[in-house]
Image (cartoon, rainbow over all chains, first blue to last red; front, top):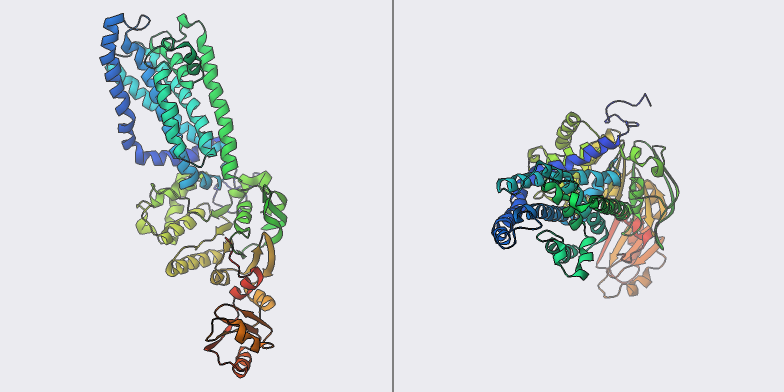
Length: 278
Length: 304
């Protein structure tokens, strides 16, 4: 293959692209789009978590701390910050993995445009997930900084919340890509917000430990990525990443989140291929 | 450049492309002509290495799309029926991001985009968002985009459908230039004038099969007569006066609003019509067109 010319504009066989080159090229699309839209996103992303932080962490927090001395020995603000972080990660991940995917599949069909170039379905998904991951990491970092200004972050271990946030976000994002690639009806997305996102936010250990729930409801929390993400992140925010009191549960949480990502990514790849490469 | 043997595409029980053979030579412009649902777009998607071949053999640049799909896609330009532009991005951004999908360097993409904006007469609109552009401009942008990787083979699926006549002529002019530059063109269309203008050679498809093949001129010679006489009568039912025209020309077709007589010598046939008895409202002699061939081969029934 030494005869293949350096520039990919010369007629004849073209120098093949590596996985990294293909992924980087595709990421360029999302980054270009982001350059246009990030300003609007800042407001919509941070307004509601910051309001939640003020209302729950400080307002409700004072009540809780005065009445019962916090949650499990920590102040309510310290308890609720990792919960709000992970619940926000869920909302960001869900909103980036529903309507935008439908746009790329159905309305502007940019996924199909990408697949008419040397990109493969796996490249298209990988590039998009990397960009989503960066978005989540960046948003989480800003939010942790804001929470720290409120006095809601007590340890540098909270930075471990960034990779946990990315993993939790992907645990929502990958199955939703699968769903978005399999459905034709975008009204389903509103249903997901009403029936999945909102209940999860309320009942997955964001604002109170799930042992406050009726016993029959608790197993529902166990299967949600949000509960695993929050439980994994909270010890880090409290300065004890492996959660001595939780005796090795972090392995279970990590495994559950990873399983969501692996299965979700597998299904998304199959569904997108069936949709666009039929 | 491209060859297909027994090329077939099925979706479940439905066979969209039913074992077709064709070959496209380098530098040629080759057309697929056919009604909606004839299998043109399915064929194009297989040739674009996007849709897997169900059975049969397909070679593009001598490569098998099932094995070397990405290598094929790196060398061809794909201009699909839908625009597939990101309307939130600007005209030039749409070109840049697409060029990066091919692994072109930033400098290559910029230089190529400048050339192509000029080619597509969009230089003045380069900073504008795509959304407010006219249909013709978007179409030119899609064609420009499909050329970003300097392809040897350009696929155009119904390139001018939905455009006004001015926009169509501008596009044809651009496609002519590409052809002159040696780019091999494969296009689908259901516009006969487009096929006559652009195609050196074409196949007519119907129900997933190729029903005729040749240059526009040979197709007319083989499947129609040299001339056609269109005769109109003052009647609600043209079948009635048409009985008197039996034997004139080589073939006759009775339509609700006129009678078509296919003849080598149109003037002689017209004279015979005027002698046949019933006085027609009008008689028009014209040359046979590809449209006559097309309707003869694929029928006049509406296919949706």
